[in-house]
Image 1 (cartoon, rainbow, N blue to C red):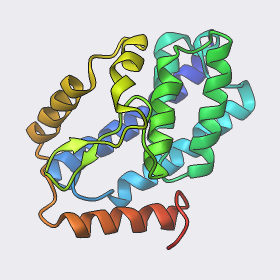
Image 2: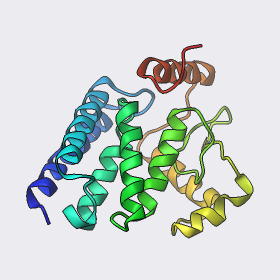
Image 3: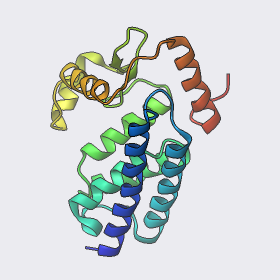
Length: 199
């Protein structure tokens, strides 16, 4: 195991977690993607890319199970760098094909990429507010989602959706008061960052 890489990943995630906790304490975590959080996610994505360039994807053989989870979390948060998040997904899929990361990791990241692109998800793991005031998502094949989730060891979609909504609301997250404005801001952000073409 490469302890230096493991420690580097841990330091990146620590900064992410500290920024999240600060924003949560300030009441700024929910409602919009805070500039400070975006900056951390961008810098962490660039650092993860540098690690992958030097060592290959940090999977089980390089950093063990915990380290591979750290790399996956950083990749999940690389929303402000579409090119890197897509690159990480390709690297993670290749690592999964060789048994070097759990199959759950690329499945989650694939849903994150689809969400950012504004497309229906495969497993339904990335949730956002709906016009009805619930956390949910569009699914490519709603009838088969629980079967696909079971393969990854995930609970049924509706059960997990409810659990996530309760967790978000317990932290202070609430449905947007003006859903149309929220949707428009989200779309404008996705266009500005490069996830979606400008209308």
